[in-house]
Amino acid sequence: MAARPPARDPSYELSGVVEELGAGVAGVAAGDEVFALTRFDHDGVAADYAAVPADLLVPRPRALSQAESAATPLPALTAWQGLFDHGQLDAGKRVLINGAAGSVGGFAVQLARAAGARVIGTASAANRESLLDLGAHQVVDGATHFENALRPVDVVFDTVGGEPLRRSPAVLRAGGRLISVAEEPPDGGVYFIVVPNHDQLRSIARRVDKGDLRPPPVEVYPLSSAREAFARSMEHGRQARWCWRSPADVVCSQQAVVARLARLHRAYDPTDMSTNVLWPRYLQRDRCTPRSALALQPPLWP
Image 1 (tube, rainbow, N blue to C red):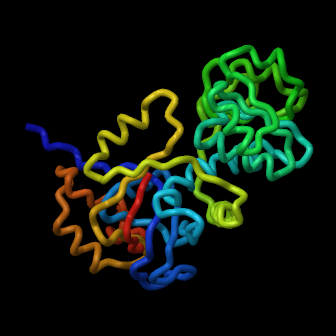
Image 2 (cartoon, rainbow, N blue to C red):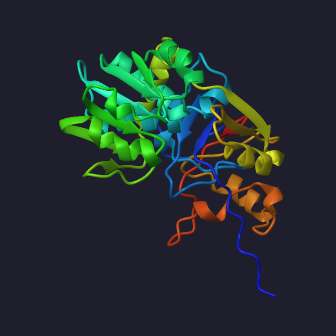
Image 3 (cartoon, helix red, strand yellow):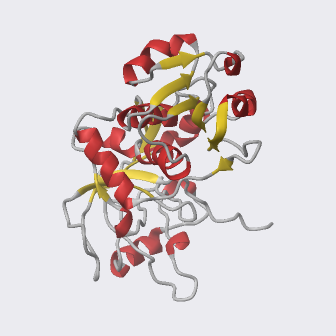
């Protein structure tokens, strides 16, 4: 019988406390409360131990809980990069945000309003008041032909794809920008995938602590309920983000914690998902040493 493939632990966002540092690590210290978005070729933070490059870690917002902090990096960075890096949005411009009631859309509404833009969001009637409270100037029903009711906009930031995205070019002014994180947009638009960015995440944390950014609701599951959490995340119309809390007291990430990770390695069974310890995917293939590491507690991962 063929051997089972090694278990792969998912997830890219985390929040926790630095426990120790390896040689050469700067910018963080033991005891720091941090959060991060890891690179998409290095998933695995849904584990009792997760290796994270120290240069991706940012002091977590003090105004948020650990769970809220863990659920913030991906949607907030996606909104930031969609609006400003790709959409080049600035004060005085008009922006249409498709799917404004979602986690990415909600951050986008707040960031766009803070930048001085005129903010229009598509959402259901049930979410209209909450979006106006977040800062939207106008909310339209994305299920209708909104393109017939809106004046031209400078930027469309799409988070849902489908029919709203296909109708969006009709709303753009000449030279406007169509940006999507859901699927490839038509008519020369830009599709992108969010990337970790230390400086942007630090700015997001500051805005949260000043009260200028509010995260979406968060549901917390034990790591043992990962299957249930994934299933619920696929339910239509869900707005809350979710994260896992590990039963372990320690997680890890830094530059050279070879002894600590080696001890974990001996206890790691790559065919047993219940161990929830990631090790092999954080080894450099040519040198077989930890790529990075730092220890976090209590670990939380969306």
